[in-house]
Image 1 (spheres, rainbow, N blue to C red):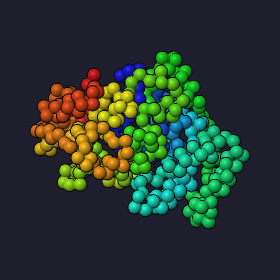
Image 2 (image 1 turned 90 degrees about the vertical axis):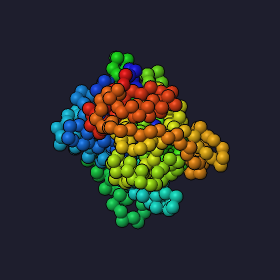
Image 3 (image 1 turned 60 degrees about the vertical axis):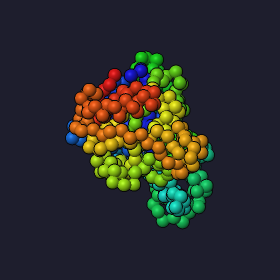
Image 4 (image 1 turned 180 degrees about the vertical axis):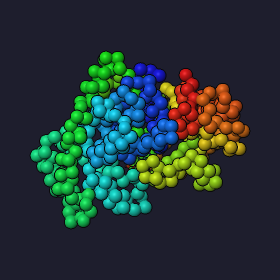
Length: 425
Ligand code: IMP
């Protein structure tokens, strides 16, 4: 691995970034999260314990690693407290190891209420958001009336900003009997977090700059995936942040010269949770098999994920817009036992062949995937720790994908546990 690397999801999220970041975290000093919020759900299994983090970077399970939450994250302070409580109950010492940017905007209970109301109003065009208040919080940030972490320490300003919310969000909050609309309550509860947050809040941008200068290594942890990027994904069926490597710079306040390499995480097939186009979706037995075997249910919402074949057209886009140099392929074991494995190499749009995603992503609703069919494999990939021990056809599958994308394979994950992994270089 280069000194400092960005790890990004190359599909619609849920690629297994949590496990990959957890693995790579052992090689670095700092793990820093740059966008998204508690819509993410990063699952890590260590021994027989399963951890799901929504906000805290996946490096927290390694002793001595510092984990940062950048200004680009929308931070649910109550959700973060719950995650901190889990750490405490598990005896994981996070003191001096968790740093939160004071410039991060907060997701407050009313954002979640508004998220739910807006989703309902969208009717049949709903996005299928996680209802974690992500969109409404980013809207407030860009509209410049968001409430930031630093506001916690200025109670008068906090009160004023909350009062202003009542004015501008009257259509959602006035007369509501939902407790999330009660801003007096939110104010009191926020003040109750001040002591917990005070020692954690830092100038993350400066901390990273100084750490880099001092020779420390940093892993930048992305959440969601490129196809959910608000600019480069399947808009409007997207999240509200830049999930791609560009988001890392603004989301942490760092310069491009701090990045040495970009690692893309690619699931060996494709999944998507929520609405929106998905050209290689399988609405058949194979799709069901992938869901069951891959345990494809959302880590944040528990919703069943839509499943389909690997999509090289979409992955070419992911590699290009992120500057991906190497990939980590996850869940290869889930493809064990299939007679054949398909890979989408092109889209057919009304007779026109496309090798790249169309400019208007809405056309993804209408494209037909063109597949290359590769032979499945006898034997299993499960828990293999060496590339050479993989069934030959599994090796061919991986090489086919890497050659097409022009990237190196860095890691292959062959099971959920930390040690069910092949490190390729
Ligand atoms: P939001 O980010 O909650 O606004 O949701 C917008 C879209 O992104 C929905 O389709 C969600 O299902 C999807 N999404 C958000 N976060 C994740 C994630 O971490 N993994 C997979 N999908 C996600």
